[in-house]
Image (cartoon, rainbow over all chains, first blue to last red; front, side, top):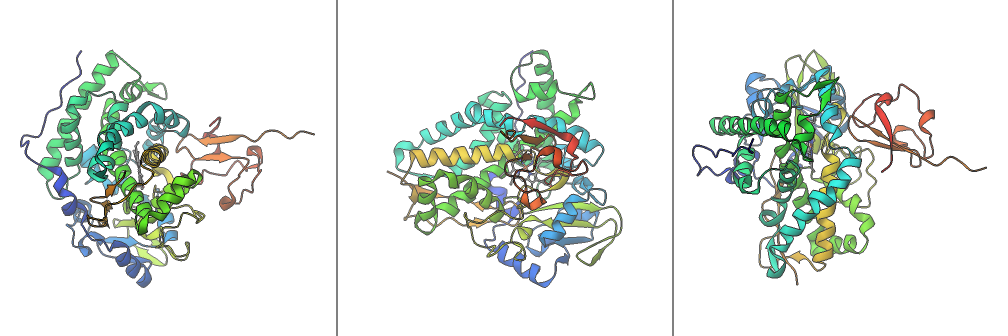
Amino acid sequence: MAIPRIQDLDDPTFDPYVSDEVMFGSMPDMHERVAEVRAQCPVHKGSWFTSMGLMPTPEEQVWPEVYRVMTYDGVQQVLNNPEIFSNRAFEPTLGSSFGPHSLSVLDNPEHLKYRKIFQKAFLPNVVGRWGDVYVQPVIDELFGAFREAGKADLVPQFSQLYPFRVIYRMLGMPDEDLAVFQKLMLTQIFFSFAPDKAKEASEKLGTYFTALIEERLENPGEDLVSALATAEVDGERLPVAYVVDFLRQLFNAGGDTTYRATANLLVALLRDGGELYRRVRDDRSLLPRAVEEVIRWESPVSSTNRLVLRDTEIEGVKIPANSVVNASLASADRDETKYACPEKFDIDREQRPKHMGFGQGPHVCIGQHLARVEITRAMETLMDEFPDLRLDPDEDEPVIVGAMLRSPRHVHVRFD
Amino acid sequence: MTSKPFRKWMCLNCGYIYDEEVGDPEEGLVPGTRWEDIPDDWTCPDCGTSKAEFEMVEI
Ligand code: HEM
C-alpha cells in the first residue's frame, strides 16, 4: 500500500501565515498589562482575550463565566488539582481541532492510561538520540541555505521552519507534501476566526493520518507513526483514533511553540549589542540556563484553561462550578513574590521555584525534553557557524509580540 | 569503605529525572538523598505521578 497524498484546502490561496495577528494579537506590552492586573488582584474576573482586544474564544461562549488566575501559587493550584480543574475546557477548541481523544482534552483515568504511551516516545533518554538523527541534519540544511549570504531573517528562514521539519522527518513523511501539510496544521486551530477552514483542515489531516497509520501497520518502519500505531496499552493496541488525534496535535504543540521559544531566545541574546550572545558562545555551559530562562521569561504559551467541576476557591476568591479558569503561565512566571526582578532576562538566576513555561501537573508538556534538545542544538550550531552573529543595524529591532503565543515576526541578522 | 555510586531515576509519565547526587532541594531532598530513602508516598514534582512509576535510567 502506497503512502497517501495529502489534500490541500479547497481554496488553495488561503494563507494561514498572515493570521497570527488576528489569532494571537500583536501587542508588545502584554507583560506590562499582566503585571498591572496581577498587582490589582490575584484572580481576575472576566475574559483576558476580549480585554486584550482579541475575539472571545469558543469556550467562553459555552461557559461564559471566566476567571483569570495571575499568581504562581494560584496557577500551581489549578494545574495540580485535576479532579476540580478539568481539561474538558478544551473540548470546544483544541478538541474540535485535534479531536476528542487528544491528550489536552482528556481527564483521568483515560488521560493517565494513554499519556504514558505517548510520553514513552519523548522521554529524555529517547530524544537525546533524535538530536543526531533528526534535529542536526535539519538545522544544517537550513543554515546551509543562507550561510554565504552574510545576512538573514532568522524567523522565516530558520526558526519558523526547523521544528516542523524535525517532526515531519520523525514521522517518515514524503518531503513533497510538506508545504500543504504545514498549511493544514496551522489552519486547523483557527477555530475562532475561520471555523470552516479549521474544520476542513482537521478533517483532511484526519483522513491522511488514518490512511498513513494503515500503511505503517502493514509495513512498520523505524518512524514515530509506526511506533505509535503498533504501541499497546494493557495488552491492547492503541486505538487508531487516539493516534490520529495525537498526530494532529503534534505539529501545533511541538512546532508552533518551539519555533517561538527559539526566536525569543535569539532576541534575548542578540539585543543590547549582543553581549549575552558572546558570553554564551564563549561559555557553552551557560546555554542550558539560557534555554530555561527564556521559557520562564517569555514562554510562548502564555496561558491555559481548565473547567471548574465544583465550587472552589483560589487565593481567597470563590469560583463557582462551570466557570472556566484561565491560568496565566506568563503571569505566574513573573510573580514578584517568587522571582527577583522577574522582568529581567537573567541567565544567572536559579530557576527556583521551577518555571511554569512547560506547565505543571498531569498535563505538563510531553515534548519539553525534545524542545530542549532542539533549541540547544540550534543555538550550538549557530554559535559555531556564525560566531559574530549580530542584529542587522539597517533593519528594525526585533520585538516579541502577542497575547497568547508570543514571538517576534522577524530577527534580521548579519554575519561575516 | 567505598560508597555506592549515585543513580538516576526517571518518571515514565513526564520524564522528570531524579538524580541522587543533586537531590531536589526545592522538594526538601538534599543532595545525596538515595532513592530508597524517599518516602513511598512521594510524588513526581513535575506531574504528580506516584514513585512507583519511576524507573532507573542511564542518561
Ligand atoms: C518550547 C517549546 C514548548 C513549550 C513552551 C510547550 C508548552 C506546553 C505547555 C505549557 C503545555 C501544558 C498545557 C496545559 O497544561 O494545558 C504543553 C503540553 C503539551 N505539549 Fe508542549 N511545549 C513545547 C514543546 C513541545 C514539543 C516539542 C512537543 C512534541 C513533541 C509538545 C507536545 C505537547 C503535548 C502533546 C502536550 C499535551 C500534554 C497533555 O495534555 O498531557 N510540546 N506544552
